[in-house]
Image (cartoon, one colour):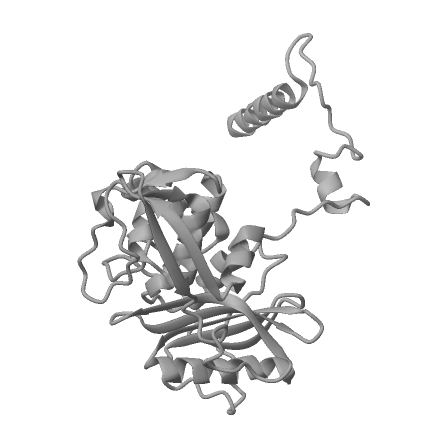
Length: 328
């Protein structure tokens, strides 16, 4: 009997505690009492007529999961990674090694341009310092010297069309306050875009430790940059002439053609495909790389990326095969 009474007392105490938790004490009242029709109630979440969902992060993006290399007419044997994406239909037409981390060479400069467009103004005057003194053998340079100045618009043309590494350093230092801080801004933007297999150590793409990305991440970055009209206009240009000032306010002339060999007419895109523009890149570590925006006869856009091909000629032949998938 003592045991039974003890259990009864414990049960009464438990019930009392539960009543206190759910009913409160004295005059205390809840602002939002339970209501089966309330938008925040568990009942409404499970059984309510009205449902609300957040838009998925990748709702407007192409999503690449596995390799898609079924078409044997596409010879990508000498490239490490490649993708072809239909932007309108969010469809993957081809994919090889899309998420493999690789050196991107000067395809890095698309992110450099994106961060500069986000944080600067086209008429902003940039001034070079000694950071533009790049001595790496074979590095593409436009010959900037400390004290030289030009607008961000001029710098972006030189960056994207001529792929000048010294201009990349000038942009980074002027827009970011320092090259190091600008690289942090690049990495922050990569994270925001969902480019989780990307890390930039410099703004130009010359070989460096912890400098890597993927074909898919480059698509995310390129896709974002294309939202800026200026970016689209620049990558479509075939040649550019400009003048800028040295430290003594004397003018310097600069004239060049795009590095994109499709736009220069050295290679022909497949029938019914128009190459709008893109970015080239080459280093010993990265191999030969190319990223393009193209359109079909109806004007529908496609993004294609090839990383680490064996030579320039092979790269453009591979890209031609890849773009021919648009016609199938």
